[in-house]
Image 1: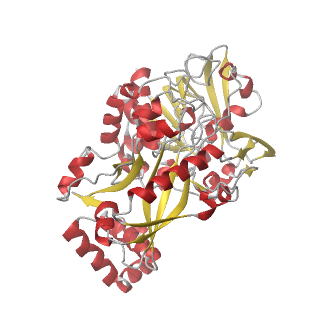
Image 2: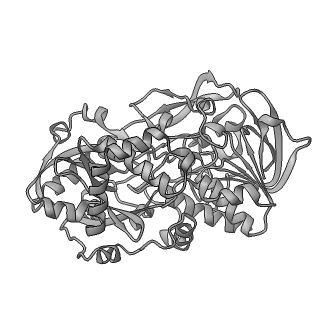
Image 3: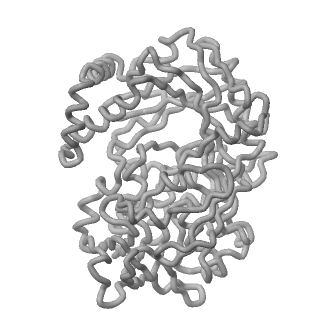
Amino acid sequence: MIRDLLDGAPAEAQHADVCVVGAGAAGILLTVELLKKGKSVLLLEGGGMDVEEASQDPYKSEIVGLRHNGVHIGRFRAKGGTTNRWGGQILELDDLDFLKREGIEGSGWPIRKSELTPYYARAIALEGLSKATLKDNDVWRQINLEPPTFESFDAVFSRWCPEPNFGRLYADTLKNHPRLNLWLHANAVEAHWEGSRFRSIRCKTLSGIEGTFSADQFVFCLGGIESSRFFLQPGAAAGPWNRSGLLGRHFQDHIVCGAATIEVHDRSALHRIFDNVLSRGLKYQPKIRLKSEIQLAQKTLNVAASLSFASEFDEALGRLKGTARNLLRGRWRETRLDDVLHAMRYSPLLARQVIHYRRHQRVYNPPSAMIGLLVHSEQDPESKSSITLSEERDALGLYRTRLDWQISDREIYTIRTFVEHAMKGLTGIGRVIPDPQLMALDPAFKERCGDHYHHMGGMRLSASPSDGVVDLDLRLHGMENGYICSAAVFPTSGYSNPTHTLLALSVRLADHLT
């Protein structure tokens, strides 16, 4: 059942086996798995059915370090959370990300990747990708090509969810399951605990209506930044989970930058290797990753790249794809007359896309496109970036986030090392022209790097309370019934999109709670 705190608080504190705070990707999948296991669930969401401007206000933050876009435009308070806007890209962390690496302070996880392998497999199905081809070499064979080989790089594919909005994907369960109560506009403002047990969560609307919710177990799925912010509030920061003093520290994002351009010699080879694949109704994106042995030898962080194709048709193509997607999925209400007229105007471009797809099973990139090397780099596990609180409160009475995002010299060294190998390894395709500021290690290059809206770290997973904030089961250190299910627990970030690993952790946590 879906209820709205704006319509009035429950007559008395609602109770369930598990209270899940946050109805984004992690909260929804965790809820679905718990319901399968016979649990009753309270799912609390601070936003509404769809993204609303007013509900976004608590995310307004103070930025004191480098420019960071994702803190404001990469988070969404609504049913489905950030899946309302993300592309749906899925990629596992590498084996290397879980290991201690010489010269990389704080590297490694306190669990091995093998512990997550079965949960990655279950997450794939829950993400709507049960029909996806999971071995990269098999994807190449489906399009009748041999996998590319490079001296310095591994060629890898990411996979894209066919329905990226988890609020839509699980709409029937969220609306109709008899053991689920989903409360909208229920912003968590305070967790009540006694000793080592949480007792209840106090929630509040932006207009001041309050409700209290209790459970046997509590899981906070608040997002990579909001998780730290919530537990840094006065009172909470003194909890037993922060004996390490690491709450809010070592925040990480993925650095994304146009590190080089490519002057193409063999356009056919370039498109054969780097154009997105559309096979059997699913999308796969090719990337190249610096080989593990090179990373270890040169003491870089984990780093990969894809190609960017910039043309005068980008805006038109993006809108065309959105319109076509809505029409094919029967979302008539989301398609405006203006969208249809735009599609008719650019119908020749759309026809070219369709014809190219049917012939080659690849996305069409116009010959006029400017081609760049878009590098995605891991940040230092012991990053100097941090999440603290500003002096300003939001309408809920909570102190706002102060984000200090930093880029280290090792991160710039990693990106430059990748480009140096690309200059040698991609000569068969074209001439890689590096950014001169990058090659000169000019500090100004950091200002031109961007974040990837991938918010990780701040509530580190650790075996000991002295080394982190949550234990190996995602339980807050010092508590019996409180858990964090957020990329905030990641000790290291790799280069991979974090959602798939987070959802594997969600499935693993569901098993633990039952």
